[in-house]
Amino acid sequence: MIQTETPPPAELDRDLALTPLDGPDEAVRRFSGHLPGGWSVGGGINGGFLLAMIGSAVRDTVPDRPHPVAVAATYVGASTEGPAEVTTRVVRRGTLTTVAAELAQDGAPRITALATFSDLAGLTDEVGTTAVAPVLPPPEECVRTSDAPPDFLRTAPLVERFEMRLTPRSVGWAVGQPSGTGLLEGWFRLPDREPDPLMLLLACDAMPPVTFDLGRPGWAPTVQLTTHVRAVPAPGWLRLRQSTSNVAGGFFEEDCEIWDSAGRLVAQSRQLARVPR
Image (cartoon, rainbow, N blue to C red; front, side, top):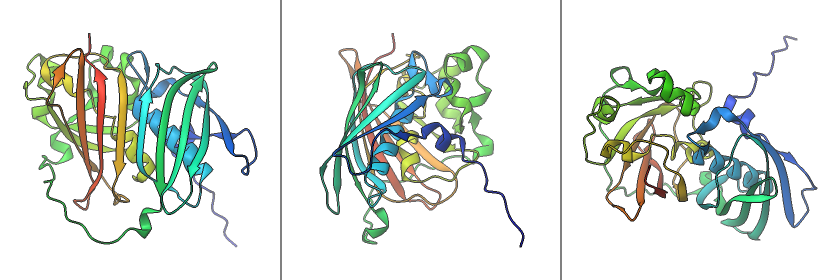
C-alpha cells in the first residue's frame, strides 16, 4: 500500500488554531490561541484576522453549524502579538444558531461579538442579486500590494500573508494621486488555500483602508465590523470592492463586497472606523 503524507495546514489555518480549555459540554467554552505578529497592521492585529479567529472558536463550539452567516463585532481595544483567549456562549440553538463570543488578552476584552452560524449547504438555490460585480483588469495587469515600499511593508506585514492585486485606478494614493472617490477594487486570494466562509471574514478587512483613496493614509482602527456571508465561495480569486460615502466626526464607514470566481456575491460587510491621523 502506498502511503501519502498529509499536507501541512495552510498558514491561515495554522495561525487560527485554538486549544480548548474545557470540555465540549460546558455551557461556556474557553479557547486559547496565539495572535501572530505577521497579521498586524499599524498598531495592532488586523480586524479581519481577529474576526476569523472568533469565527473559528464559534465553529468549534457548534460544529453542526459550521458556517458564519452574520457576525457583528465591536472592537473594544487593539490586539497585539501574543497569547489570546476566546470565550463562547451559545445563546440559542436551531437552524440558525447564535453564539456570543469575546476575545481577550491579559484578562482584558479586545473584541465582543454576536455570531449567527448555520450550514450554508442547506440554503435554497434562489438568487436575486441586483448588485453588479466589479469589472476588473485581470490579476496580472493589477498592482501587487506585496511590491509596496519597504517602509509600508514594515508597518503592515499582513500584506505578505496573502496575494492582493489592486486595480491601477485604486493605487493612485501610493504616488500621491488618490482619486478622491472613496473606492478601492482588486483581487484577493491565499497562496496555499482555497476560499471558504471562514476566510471571507478575513477578506472583508484585508484591503487598505478606503480613506487611502481620499488622500488620508494611515492606520484606521476598527470600531465595529459586521459581516454577512451569503454563500460558500467557489475556488479561485475573489474580487473585492470597498467604498465609503461619509467621513465625519473623525469616523468613516467602509462597505465591502466580495464576489467569487463564479460571479456570485458571497459576502458583504460594513465597518465603522476612525479616520487615520
